[in-house]
Image 1: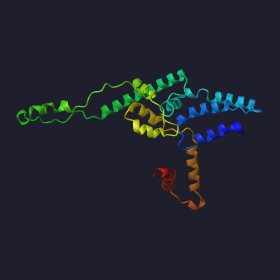
Image 2 (image 1 turned 120 degrees about the vertical axis):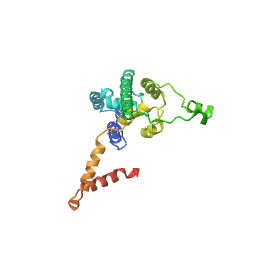
Image 3 (image 1 turned 90 degrees about the vertical axis):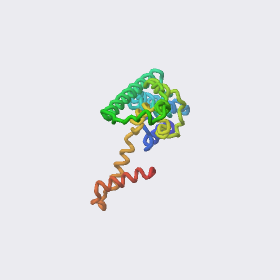
Image 4 (image 1 turned 45 degrees about the vertical axis):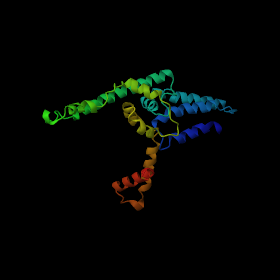
Length: 236
């Protein structure tokens, strides 16, 4: 039935191994839009209406879920393009608060790991150096750039042009991490989550295929290695 095609395709897309948590909100928006655009719905208008109502009932507040809202906002394919103004403001506030928290945690860890005192450096005798040598520290010092606030960094990231849906957001972050270091920390945490549990279920199924009567003596360590190779062979 044609009216079910968008849902069937969406199910396959979010069940893919490469699907991320950031794909959930766009997928809900896409399904609703696809159903609304179906005009050849003779005889199934009630079904279509019920499907749209059920989607609103189940996913109407999906943008208020921190995981999906934050993941969507830090994904360079989507950012805040699919949010309403209020949803965008709320998601931006969440990301900004996270950026500030992570920055504080990182700074605290860095201070704790620094040695209490610096080693004593012997001073060169003044008559052994040129007067110009005394300027080296100033001449070689990095230019001091004003540090942007968390809100400024988030706002600058959101102003950038989205990449295409076919591009890999994780690869984009590898290239642009230095430009938005604090937002990148949030992206690492939230874009590492899959959109569904299907990939994990596939892994359990593969484990079930490994263990059989003919492999009753297969050790857990070897089984783990075989599963790792099978699911990461494309990266090797």
